[in-house]
Image: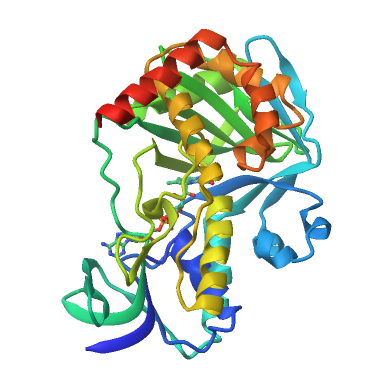
Length: 395
Ligand SMILES: Cc1cc2nc3c(=O)[nH]c(=O)nc-3n(C[C@H](O)[C@H](O)[C@H](O)COP(=O)(O)OP(=O)(O)OC[C@H]3O[C@@H](n4cnc5c(N)ncnc54)[C@H](O)[C@@H]3O)c2cc1C
């Protein structure tokens, strides 16, 4: 049986980022195996995230804060706009930028990096089993056994059916369109446009312009039931016809995805030699679905821990866990339809310009959180708070 120091089970966003960080660390000479059933040579998704402009200069150890993919970003927007219930226009980003990284650019960049390292092996194979043993983490892929000191698993499927948890889905379909008439402001990304029927859920469109004639237009829903494919198309078509003076357009690319929005307690370290990472490790922020930037931060912590202590386990300070409670309360408000979601997002973005991104990055102080909560509808959130407590205690 082949023995490695680290097996990365699933070479997607989290697995490949981890490999990159390991190779930048004192552990760069370790034997690493990356297993994935796909070749990762398609633009199968784009990742968007926000980041503070001054992060580069503010931190004394900037590498610990920043992702290393700045040079391959597809777009960076310094301005964002929003269409809500009582406000339409630009939002003050207070020093944050909104960024887009295309899957294909990320996979290509990592391929080039990994090719420089003879101690890294990549295999296209389907993983059938991952198991802890006294000798290490054990993996079977395409009927071949492998063992390693640590297995980093991003293939584990979360169980999203426990009644004490809130298990919503963020599902979306997007078209990259090229228009006959210039109709986009390429300097400004529209992050949420609620001028569409809500159907009792939370539904919005976002428009990420690449230039004045090309943009990704995406229809997104937060609820618990996926739609038929044509329903996403109808929404996209109606929105474009109603709000974008395209003069005719062509669909160049499509994107479809489902992201779990769940407060299922995930086990990042289910056993001694297995570490779950990415969506499988619970790195997705339950209330927003954003995963990319958090994954970069958490993986850097894991690699730092491994390099300094020999163990990858992250410790989350107890007072940081309050953000999980906030996520559950928010999911409860959405799930139980306690207040229209378009109004909640309008309040969040327009009444909290100074703290909204910081809050979503879980970097606010408690006092700032109280200020943000004060802008929310009181009774729906209070009822959600008690409902979360009841459900979690009963569970
Ligand atoms: C279309 C789409 C768009 C998204 N956009 C954003 C965004 O804009 N911003 C953001 O923050 N998040 C976004 N996300 C959420 C999240 O960032 C991505 O899903 C991200 O790719 C998660 O990284 P991961 O490594 O956990 O999973 P993945 O990137 O999916 O990697 C898992 C890998 O495991 C492999 N695998 C699974 N099972 C097996 C098996 N049995 N054997 C072998 N290999 C296996 C898969 O082939 C895959 O390569 C998006 C998700 C989707 C689907």
